[in-house]
Image (tube, rainbow, N blue to C red):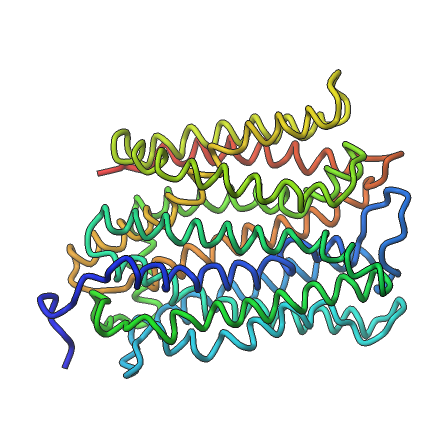
Length: 442
């Protein structure tokens, strides 16, 4: 028999922090495949030889990455629905997380372990298989995991607090991942660059598995989660979620945001080493500073969201990101020192980074909670699953486009492709701003 809402306990802060550790784990596991795939298989041409050529057709990297993400994206709603309908004793969300966490972490490392040390079709096949498996288990962990934001947060303010905790955890995971460049340089003292990079990614994979296990072991879903199994079948649930006008406006704008963000995440090493002609280790050096500054912004962002609403802050952030991406397109051509340009870029993107790292999850959780109150059917997993599906389709398009744009120029002598990635990201953010205006914050 399901517990009634009166028997569900409000999770204390300690439990919510333990829950957030899982976010840090999957953020770290996802970092290398999401942000370093091009760096490893299509390294920047800045005069240094980093890694040997491992694939016969560089064009295939973007295609494989995009296709595997696209195929996997359509699995997300079914995982979400299975999670919504589950009656597992351990908890309907934790059951999926338990199955997924270990292969998810392992595949984040195996993607960078091609079987042949020279250009080979076998390596291309390996990348495709590993990426598909990686995205599948990523979905199996993250879709049920994010649904818990709505179910552990019993009020609007509680959901905003949880979103802040998981946002900070996500930033911590990405910050650890960004140390890959420094860790690679450290290991290069005793091994070749390729093995040094693989060692760094392997260490992060182990850490991510430990972090993802924490909420499975220590968060009692049955005790704290305000939810019942959904009775809707997959297609019925998908139609029901997509019929929500507010959710459609959010999801489409969020998709465009992820297209733009993927360009920047994949391109940062190119912007630093090719456009600004600085050392890649600057990324690792800047990461702790960015993390501290973002942490300082979390409380102001939450207060502003309460006072002015999430919609207004997200719209302002779309415009600030558009300006920042336009600035990136001009890096290296401005009458300023390269270090000054890097610092100005950091100053521009900090506030929108803080907003987008906290508020989107809270927006989806609010929509899911209002829908549950209205319909009596608890399908938070499906709301987050559809969001992830649309997000992954956007990321798939971005990954294919980014790799193909690099073929137009990724060297200090010809940087056209790199600059185009930033210009397209700017246009994407302007489009996201226009679409999000249709969101009605109640």
